[in-house]
Length: 351
Image (cartoon, rainbow, N blue to C red; front, top):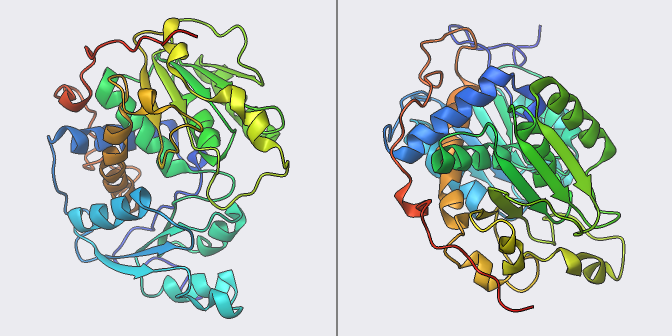
């Protein structure tokens, strides 16, 4: 057997995270609970990756995710090797498979953002020595969804039963959220996506299957009419998804009705606002909302580091060890003072 395909002697096989679907329900909840513990300050550092080396490869731009995984890796004991878009011989034609074989002989974890097909990351993950973490592919942004679940748990103390409205393109963030939120009983996840820019059918089918099993509800419509009342969360992402181009020349006209404005709070006055950032004020969201009292978008961004720490722990944890540090449930977390649930309601301006 190839020496680069098997775990190092004395170490358990690495665990990959390419898609939310790679996680069992138990693993998903463990990562989210652990991220919330880091966020709450009940745990600040970990030694889970002491002596290990993490590669951080970003072929596309990143502020939050790259910093989160770099800082997070240091805080769980790893050392870092960083690669930019021009650093690997992939640029000169070396295959994904050969690159993965080489890197897996030298690294213990590779966090990679390609904005390319998921199959590329699967190629790197065709071994169990080096864990591969998808920091964003064309199809899915799983670590963003884990960040968002961590933020929800910190703010509300639960994920179950929440009512979440997503407004905007059915992009890789929306896909990961759909696959993750539908694991939780009683969640109502409603997507309002522009016509022609919804969830991929394969993602929608997988999410609906999850929802049927868990008792969650998934709804997707391509207009902003007849919105239900009483959402707990309003979520959007920027219209220009990293690494993509819109097929329609008039796409801004198509997206215009899906701008998040304060009017949405007329029927959901207690909702908090979330955004994966970067934001373009005046496009997908108004400044009044993003910078307003109901926004928790910047606390959400900080939680990316806390969630990254939990993900990195997961990659080298024992799936059968209930005593593993990532396994402990988040029983009693301090209130998230930065996102006080009693913040003033956002009232819409006259329309």
